[in-house]
Amino acid sequence: MTKPTLTLDEIRKSVSRIDKEILALLTERRELSIEVAKSKIQTEKPVRDPVREQALLEKLVKAGKEHGLDAPYIISIFHSIIEDSVLIQQAFLQQLTNPDSSHPVARVSFLGPKGSYSYLAAKHFFTKKQTSLAELPCQNFKEVVEVVENGTADYGVLPIENTSSGSINDVYDQLQHTRLSIVGEITQPIEHCILTAVDTDLESIDCLYSHPQPYQQCSDYLRSLGNVKQEYCSSTAEAMKKVAEMKSANVAAIGNASSAALYGLKPLKANIANQQENHTRFILVARNPVDVTDLIPAKTTFIMSTAQEAGSLVECLLVFRNHGINMTKLESRPVMGNPWEEMFYVDVEGNMRSDKMKLALEELTALTRYIKVLGCYPIENVTPTEIDVD
Image (cartoon, rainbow, N blue to C red):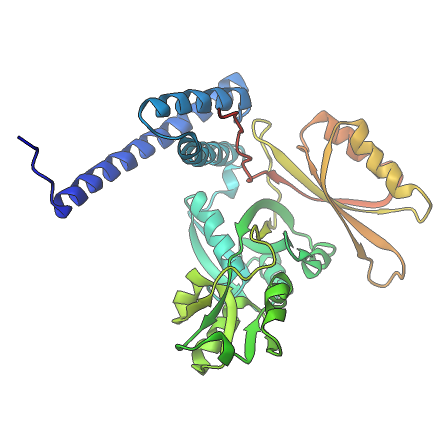
């Protein structure tokens, strides 16, 4: 006798039951991640253990195959689980290291209004920290910085570089003069779409609204549209708001599809960026610096001005090599009021607590005309552990 076939409703009930069990297990695993962090305080072991992660993935892939699950599926799931565990442990350890910087509600300024990419980055960052967000939209980057400086906001979120359009110079110029410290970073995927308020087609669009950065990041696609006028807005959210108010079949905005729903817009064309892997790195600034525990990977950002002599910059860069410090970013910007003089912005992988960073900064101080540390902060980008898959 054949087994009776389950109805669709019965199948869905079984799937829902399994999903609830998975969520309960993920919650239990998160709680164990905190216990792991507590044990690492006692043993002084770093949060990440690449050898352990690699062995774990290999074991899981082998076990998965016994259940008929392919390796890429298992690796994808557990990369996300490991990333979550690492970030949960880092946040826990940082909270212990900086007890005064913990806020149940964080007042955060960003280039707004609500729905901009800066807003999405702020929301993403503080959701990971399980902190509620009090939103303070701003008209420009200068205002984002000023409201943190005057105490109206606890933090400011600023885009610093994009994989497609490069560095965001306006933000670097703000960092040159601010008293604020960089206390965190987050990398946000940027998914540009053509967004409209009414049903229309691409051939009808003769005017686009957006922030200048998306125009740069989508330049290849925009050229294919022909003679379409580009109107500049202070943010992608402002562009979406304008298009929503106009309700015209010949205008559209460039922005994020999930944010478009806030303004009643819908995507007409998705994935229009020059690069499919389009990401923006955002930094978090605050009035006071944070102390980064030795147990988690850290990044230090500083600015420096070298002597106007041949080889001065090279001499400074050799300091990092001599101390085994990896430099991840070098950006130059003109010094306002001093023609032909440049300020260099430098990101390195290193903790201000470490002896090699202290020695490197001492040597740089002797070699440069001016140097200022903008911040030492946790590296939030968790690089997936790779394994060989047969």
